[in-house]
View 1 (cartoon, rainbow, N blue to C red):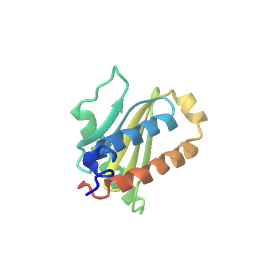
View 2: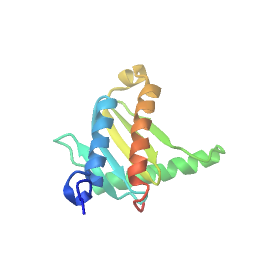
View 3: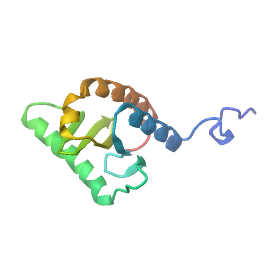
Length: 144
């Protein structure tokens, strides 16, 4: 029996490797990204990449999941059934969160408000959404 394309042969990347590749693609698309991660629907970390000097705490991961729930609640008050992309901009940082099926892709970027306002965020969103389409395929059989 041939195993050249089986997972155990090493020729098929595992889920963690494929997620890391997707996170690298996000960092290449969205400028100034310092931390990027994929969370399960319950806020559990599945994969991440970060700037070497930064390490997020569990409070950050819980806050990301909580923010997503709050955004959904807020969107329902506006008669919207979904809130698939969130960008929060502060004085020196931008937080972005995207739905990936039942999972979340979240990242922080170091960018000042003036620079952020000059970026074509829609263009970056479209590029990230292409990456998300690939991630969604990877995660569709993973329990959220």
